[in-house]
Amino acid sequence: MEIPPKPPQLLLSSQFSLQNRVCEVTLNSAFLSWKEVGLRQKRTAGNIYGPLKAAGSHYVPVCEIVSVQETEEECPSAGVGKWQKVPQNPSESNSHAFTVSYVERTQKHRWRCSEVTFHCTDGTLCLQWVQAIREQLSLLTIRPKSLLVYINPYGGKHHGKRIYEQKVAPIFSRASIFTDVIVTERANHARDHLKSEAELKKYDGVVCVGGDGMFSEIIHGLISRTQCDSGIDQNRSDETLVPCGLRIGIIPAGSTDCICYATVGSNDPVTSALHIVVGDSQPMDVCSIHHDTTFLRYSVSLLGYGFYGDVLTDSERKRWMGPARYDISGVKTFLSHRYYEGTISFLPADRNVGTPRDKMQCRSGFPKIKKSSAGCLQTDDKQVSKDKEIFSDTDTKGVWQVIRGKFLAINAACMSCACPRSPKGLSPSAHLADGTADLILVRKCSRFDFLCHLLRHTNKDDQFDHPFVEVYRVQQFRFTPRHEETDSELDLREAEGSGRKRIFSQICKEHSACNCGLAQSSWNCDGEILPYAAIQVRVHCQLIKLFARGIEEQSIFDEPSALSAI
Ligand SMILES: CCCCCCCCCCCCC/C=C/[C@@H](O)[C@H](CO)NC(=O)CCCCCCCCCCCCCCC
Ligand SMILES: Nc1ncnc2c1ncn2[C@@H]1O[C@H](COP(=O)(O)OP(=O)(O)OP(=O)(O)O)[C@@H](O)[C@H]1O
Ligand SMILES: [Ca+2]
Image (cartoon, rainbow, N blue to C red; front, side):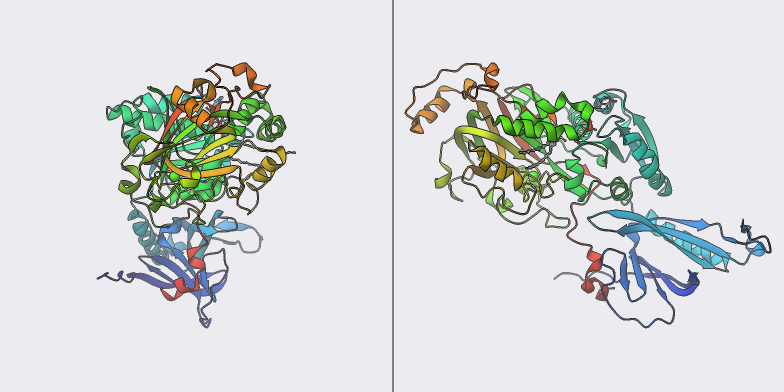
């Protein structure tokens, strides 16, 4: 039998003046609330974005209070018309106040730091309230007290430093969070510092101010450090990696900001800062990528060969353009319409984690998938080639599948990859922490068809609903470009019934322009180019944690049912 939750314990209740109106203010272990005295209570859902309101009542969850401070009262100085500070000593003054800063939800999953100031004539009462609220905040042990912050001054539009100083640092200081700030001086500065120098015991989390590339540096530093400390060899693709202890916060200041957008729902620095302050925690899957026995990189967002690899390769030469480089290179790559041949082998995920075609988007508070079910799936390394038509629930479990073909794009998304350019992302139903990635294969098709597919990244239509697009939820996969294919993979191509003569393995990087089928693309790994085309990829369930909570469906405090529970 489920034990009903204890009702919140009433801690304080007093009358204060708020904007020249008398309010009844109440603090219990769950909420700070206030309502105007004399107003008849009518229960309504109130403002859909604001704190919970019921006809003049306001409820702020204690866990969303940023801070509380005694406020220096100001009052008009007689005759002069100037405002003067009132002395702090209660005997010298009859006006006292305290200010509560709290999270307020606005549109598009954005959070703001709002303030409410309560006034009264009793200084001791004010002090009592400040202490009581602070005591409640001190019970929230999930909140970080000390953070290590890395700022990339050259990410996105080069605004990282300014964004941190003007929008984020004041919020951290209001929440009494201690910070050590490092402005990076070169690429990989943050990664190398985290890997070997940083005194991680001093901190409750690491914050990166920058884009996906900067986040990638942070996870590489933290994951490598954790494996090194635990004696794990990252070059072994079959190793079970040790999860990182420290949470990571992302202050978006990059060009795509996909990881921030897909885990918070917006790319707004203030929202991210507030998620850090309240101590949110969102586990996240990470892919490890190997070339034979060499570890290459980790990926959390997009691992893309073909189209997205070519966009990135071209855009790197245009870094000076800032975020616009991706659009220019995108159009150029689209027009070149290159396809690439190769073999994809993959190990399908358990069916209990859903499919990429279901409409179950990853949202905050969704039933969490237990790590054991997704992280420790049994694998059967038998290579069996099958066509997608004969896949079924029973015969694909634990069995490697092999697909050969000509592809415009091969994309693996460990999460939705939602970003301002593509608000639903590359795989709208991919989950942040289920131990799987969605493998999207876009076969050779006409330019027009490919454009239709790309357009669906920007609207509500199903981007997988094309005959030339296949999508699989996988735990592991490997890719072999055509010139490195083994005899059995080439046999498979012959078995496809093309009837053409077998073409022997041949390295043909120069053929990128002639579209003869021997061309080789590069992998775009979270915005970095991988040095090999032949790779093995494995998803590690919940290897890292973010200061985030996933995208909120809508404010839970907007629900009328939530009101009756109070
Ligand atoms: C017709 C409009 C179609 C628009 C389609 C937009 C789809 C955008 C999907 C973006 C998915 C991003 C996934 C995240 C990747 C990050 O780890 C990585 C590092 O930050 N960013 C990129 O690689 C940056 C990748 C940025 C790719 C931009 C591609 C733009 C394509 C434009 C094609 C236009 C065709 C027009 C024909 C006239
Ligand atoms: N001080 C620095 N000088 C030069 N490069 C740096 C510095 N600090 C970090 N970097 C590198 O800059 C690259 C890009 O940074 P970042 O990800 O912040 O911005 P972006 O590429 O504009 O955005 P996005 O990755 O979202 O597309 C990262 O790969 C990082 O390694
Ligand atoms: Ca996932």
